[in-house]
Length: 107
Image (cartoon, rainbow, N blue to C red; front, side, top):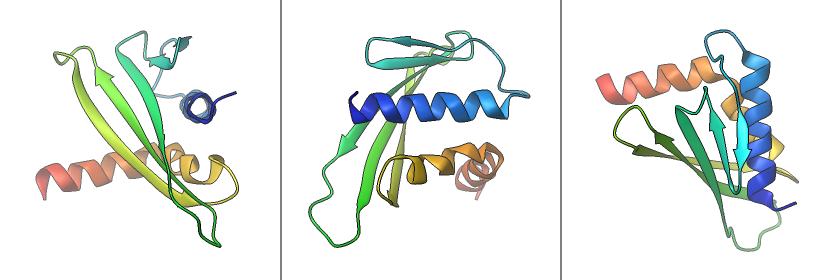
């Protein structure tokens, strides 16, 4: 399975586990993941990080917001670990991400 597909599956897992106000159906379409009853589509891109003693992951998750004229948001994920789960786990704390985005927009 391609690394990008693994990343999208991890994101889907974390969204489903979170539940609450993040309801709606999810589905995989080709190289994308649709969330929230199709209102959002995610695509992932894994970047080369070069060689180093510490294993690193650098990825971008492109989020298309269909209710906002298909605006695209680019989230950069960077972390260390043997696989994608460590860096992707940062997405699991969505309240933290939401508060950080409010700081960027309003700060």
